[in-house]
Length: 443
Image (cartoon, rainbow, N blue to C red; front, side, top):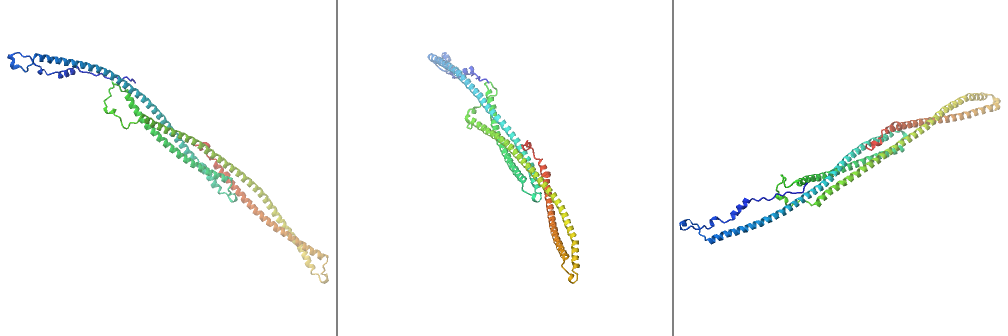
């Protein structure tokens, strides 16, 4: 933009100057007229002497000369003043134009800075919105592990008898439930923090946009002002515009307001970056914690299944031994019963012989060797029968205990099979639905 300013030259009307001179000249009626004698006595309006006449026009000549010199002096001073004021006006206008140009550059710089930070804040807000959506996806994804863990705990409450134990699997499942609850609470707090940061970013962005709008409008006005010249057709006189406005701020305060706004925006940008890094690290840690705990639970399930299989195998092996022993004991009881039955005939024979010999008359009733042998035979058979009956009772008691052991073993085997079914068929397949690392990271 040219800094040269054209100033219109003052225009003087010579006719108006002549008119003013005529108005200042004395009235012709006051000039004494020469006398033409008695014949014109009735026509004389005044009587002046030649000396007065001469003095009068000499006075006029001197006055005209004085006015002429004064006019020449005023004209010389006016030309000098015109040149001086023209140069001063041109210089002042050039200075104003240059200062307007510098002001435009300064406004453009701050407006560009405001625009850059506005775009940055807008990008940060959009990035935080994506982070918020990601956190909400992670929060929703944690419902699946929570449902799996609680379902595993519920299924394991249906274990029977002694298998309803607080084992390592239940402890790991309880840890998993507590971990998921803590992670969900952390995610909710982080989402609230992200929402607050988005609001602060938008407030700072709105402040910058208002400042940018003001500077954009000011730039437009200053740009139009800088384009005005002495030949511009859209310029007008505004006498009151030169008065100092009370609400005008200083350049220092004007710059400080913008710097404060940019400082606040920069602070929010740094807070946004810190929050995004924190969220990224938090998601990485929570995902890793969930996957590690899931592995611990799976490992505990596998170990518990191995323990159940081992216990069930040992019980089944022992049950096979008990069943074999029950069969042997049953055969033993049959054998003892048969042995007792086999002693009845010899006992009848011996007792019958003793009875018949007790019928011998008089001195024939002698305790001879056959009598002593028969009595010994009866006593021996009685002792044998007592021993056999005792063993039969013991064998029957043993068989009863074996039957009880068999029932207990079968019940415990069924209990282990039921527990193993819960662990392998109910809990572990359900855990295969556990979310992947990508899902738990919110992607």
